[in-house]
Amino acid sequence: MISMAAYIRLHHFYAYLEAKHNPSLRHQPFVVTQGRRIIDVSPEAAKLRITTTMGIRQARLACPALQVIEAEADPLPAAERFWDICAGFTPLVEPESHNSAFVGLSLQGEIKVAGEKIINRLAQQLAVPFYLSIAPNKLTAKIAYLEAADLSLSVPGQKPLTWHQGRGRSSSPLKLKDREKPERKTGRCLIIPPHSVEDFLAPLSVNRLWPWPDKIHQQLQNLGIYTIGQLRQVPRQKLERLFGETGKKLYHAARGIDPSPVKGIYPPKTVQAYLQLPPEMDGCRTWGALTKHLLPMVESCAQELKRQGQACTRIRLLVEYKNLEEKCWDKQLKNELQAADQLLAAVKGLLTQEIWPSPITGVRIMLMGLKPAALGQLALASYLKPQRPRELEQLLASLQAKFGADRIFTGSEISIPRRERMLQLLTGFGDSPGEVIIWPAV
Amino acid sequence: MARRVNAPIQVICRRKQPAAFSWEGRLHVIAQIIESWKERGEWWEKAPEITVYQVMTDDQGLYELHHQATGQWILYKIYD
Image (tube, rainbow over all chains, first blue to last red; front, top):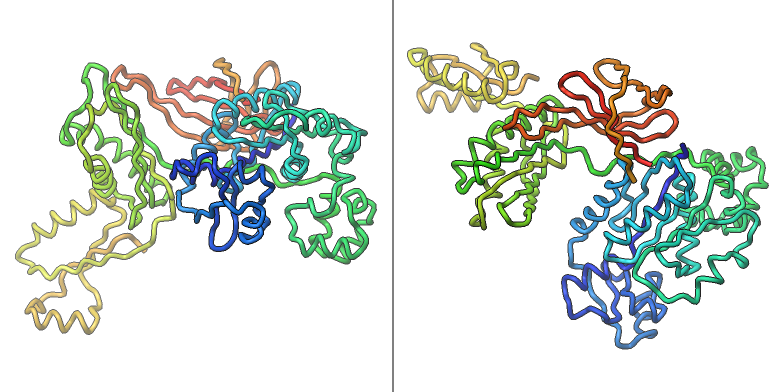
């Protein structure tokens, strides 16, 4: 079993999003900006050698007809689709940005065969060009990507290429043979097998050490260290003396050692529940009919949230309609929710905002954006006269049913702040200290 | 990529969580439980609930284990 890290990056991601948002941009040279900075270029602009490192003025000099588009489309839904595709073949997905992610692979067979499978799968599912690099760790995988992207390897998607030990960059079969091939909208792949890592890294510039900022690269170059191979010759003590803790990491990086694992942080932790209605029911047509099926599901979600001590800040519903495509509803919540009735109200808000196109046959609830539940304290001071304890007991029982008996307390004596004492006097309920309900227990 | 196995296995549990399992005559020690969740299929047919574990073993293998309500463990998937 070999553990490898893959780095996948989608190219022209933001440009494709903007073109989808505004179809008139299709097949036009344009750049996507955020503030005054170019964050992406369209494929047509890239052909004119316009890059994200250019200023807008410089880009316009290269192409007077260039359109400058301020980023408007929300990249998150498309990014989540991309990460979902990655999560389809491994549970270890660590998003780096909206258009890139590290994925952890556990390979049993040949690396090249696995590379072929992955690239085929990605090419089938992704609508944008992508780069894939596979290496023993994250550091080398991203360096391989940076190198491959700079070399502009126009490698057809179905052919992953392996870095062969002992071959220099200029004699690499990747560069010369494939450069003449036409640009394709599929992926490109570069694989660095474990035994080739040091040879692969040796001739590369220290600027390729992406985890460290340019300042470190500059300092290394000031010391006469220009390549990763040269960095490898520097004794560990010297690096530690010059760079402290960073020196130790640079020592390992020069040898292609990166102890940081690919973390399985996507999909983020959620509390989910899925309700499928029995086929003979033929779906639910009204909210009232659906509620009785939804309620146990929402309650189990609320229980799970409570068990984890979490509250959710985002809710997503995947609704299955009879004979129609599944529809996704997503809502960022203003307040953190944990209780079942709050969740049910949020679900109702989402489901009843438009008429159902056909009966609902299934609902998946995903509670996202989990946060530790705030330790709030709600003190309900009741100034009910002792002659009416039954109403108070009913209120107490309903609160205990909702939030749990261990979270609701009663106290017969409290110190009432001056302002409330004044209110009591004004409202005439100053005869009894009253009952106090405190939630949750603190 | 994932390979479906769907075969019963022996699992050693610690604190009600899988700690190791044997597969093809080898003991795989679980180094990390990446994710776990419960799945319920056709509830109207009284299909039992299963608990799904995505685990990483100490030799970097990625597996999906299913724990059925009957107590049986299934090696469902190998990510390779």
